[in-house]
Length: 547
Picture (cartoon, rainbow, N blue to C red):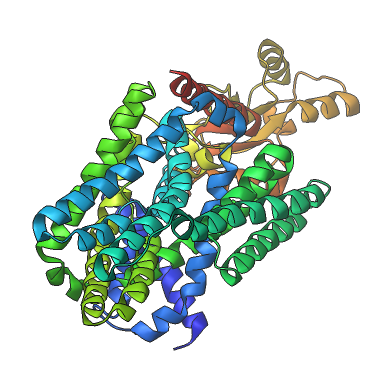
């Protein structure tokens, strides 16, 4: 199978199914997953299992970008405003998932070691799913900030919980001595090493990046530092998520101006990277595993959901967070995918040397986590979208370019512009111009058909070259139509046309076949209107954030 062919299919087909998903009010992420599922081993098997496994480099790259984006959202001023409560929430939702899953599996099987193993998997989240939905929905506000922070921090805590729970499970299986040093040595090194790596690379790269003027150069340095951070993390078995999260935090807090430009540059890459990442995730999903999930998998799913949502709610209540965080934060952190599968494989590697019992446990753990991942990959992004929608934070993090993509010419055209009749005496034209504050006047015939334009500059040239005579009429000084637009034309195309022609105004006619004038497109007025709407939504988001 050709690598370039895989990338092409992943992006194009994933994008198409993602758009269909959005049409039926589901996150685009769900569509990307479904696209991968269709082409993966479960259905068409265009990309077989071995090939899909070889593409895991894209998974690492996507997770690195996601972690960097999360870090770039974690300003110290925002964290300070949230207070220590966000830490309380992170601790309680992680331990809530661990404790409830452990309890549920124990009551089902009566085996504490098995319960601890599944409990160890529960806190791990999938930040990519949450972040992709937040960016797709242009979310902004208090809940959005909390989601970025929690999904960024809880993976560090998940590593610690996993190490302790697996050590206890192995002790119950084979006996032996347990020490605090042996429990914490690996996780502490991984967490501290990851954070130190990200901070070091961020400090050096950020210093040079803020001295660059070209967006291309900034993209190169930013992308290079993310890949360097990721490569070193993989080589030393560190957490690439924590390392790149630290990298983003250093950028945004030490070099805020450079970070804004780096963030904008990276944003251009996110959509195709997300599509490939979730396409791969979908291709990894094996529908045949769902029947094997059984009662154990169902208990795991229900207990994990209850633990995350209950722990987040309790943490928000104890730390006196706003009602919107109490109600909806838990719903937005249900995603689970690559990190959990990675932990299950790591657990399997630790269990297999323990004899036949360990071998059997390894198969059960890997298959059950892989099966439940299908459930969480679908309901997780949907839960995130519902949460931010109920919180009223959809569409608040927008730019003028975002608005332009959603508008047509008819949404912003001026329909009250005075027109000039072709036979109107020049003295009447001067009177109309002096009584209004426009710079551009369409000229129409008796049937309101557009035949030309008159501009202030054109009138000045008329006065400069000849005397004002009563026999001059509008048509004598009218300029030809350079171009025109229709009401249904996308605003982005119309504005691009004004830039190409280097004009500030374009007449709007009924259709390409009908030149009846119905309005005018004024670029400066459109920009002012768009800026006002962006500012309005920003104030709305700030109001939600401070409530």
